[in-house]
Length: 360
Image 1 (tube, one colour):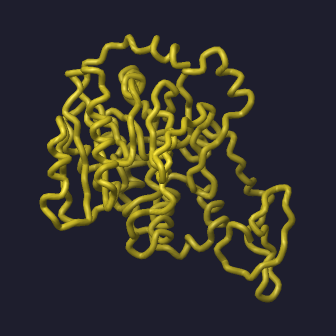
Image 2 (cartoon, one colour; image 1 turned 90 degrees about the vertical axis):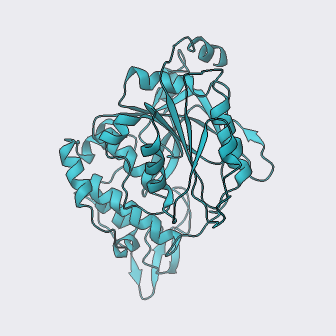
Image 3 (cartoon, rainbow, N blue to C red; image 1 turned 135 degrees about the vertical axis):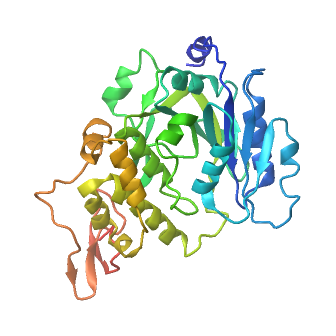
């Protein structure tokens, strides 16, 4: 695969690239590695500049980020207050003078020739949003582990997950294992997108807070509004997957995630949002704010219904039929029938009712 990937690097790029990083209470050394890798591993592409670095920090020290700003082609932007990932990324994108935007988490390490295959796909079609294969960097010892090239992004209960390709899909790729992979969902932390298409498509939902759900929203929006999402096997970027968030969420992470997810569901999922509420009934109690501007955006862009997305983009997702299913818990007294965390081959049991859905 490595040899095949190198054969594709003959494409000549004259585009200017902007890379936006985001950090809040993150490790400065990890960000420096990401910024240095992103800016440096471009194999003497003098046309690829400037590199933008988006920084939001919890410190009041005005000198914070000064050293990062000394890295060649890195510009540090500070928010006056905590804005969260979505609004910070939009600020970085607005400041970029590039034709192409690359969004990278701060805790990433870029490999050699990570960029060319991504830019090639966007240059051929500006409505493509492309992501590298995301390798794993161990947070404890920084060991680098390559990820499988047989994965696509998906979701369950509106939580992102990786899906293995079907056997038929894997067999069809044996003749060309470096071919782009159409994916229903992107992880959200690492992707490349045409700047003007990003703006035309509505950037991010600026009413989403902190982190979470934004990858669902932008994935639905890209597919339903005429674009496409791809994972490019010739591009690999390492990512430090943390065991827990190194920062706090105002109101709690569960509430923030539910609010963001509800905004995505209410705008893009049509009647299928009811399956989410059936699986996570507690989400119904979380206010999601005003979505009128996003609904108007969907209408303006003449976006397709969510049923189209399920049938054409994510047919592997098992969706209950509206006609033959009932929602809720089987309850007697204060106890409910519960899966007890088991899967299809497990045994159900009885557990105290908690109205959170999922297992009951």
